[in-house]
Length: 82
Image (cartoon, rainbow, N blue to C red; front, side, top):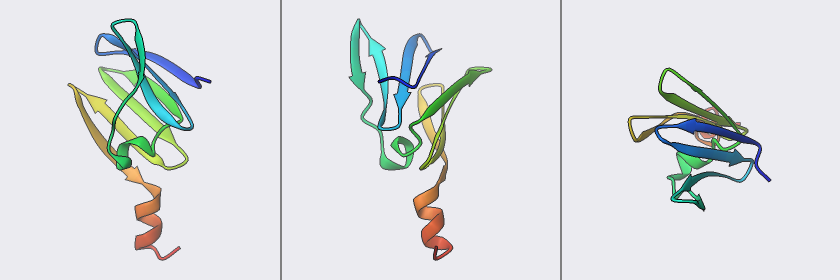
């Protein structure tokens, strides 16, 4: 099931707790993203041309075709020895 769905950079983006998906050319597909981005699956928001994705594992954003990780909680926990 889809948890969130937004329009960003000319396509539909979808997410749930297990991944980030897109609808391109009438095809629903899972995005093949690096782990530090895919752990952010869960919720989405778009504003001023930026797609923000955040979930239990972290947060990331997409702008101008490029993904950037904001925080990966598993890496943070390792650094803090939690």
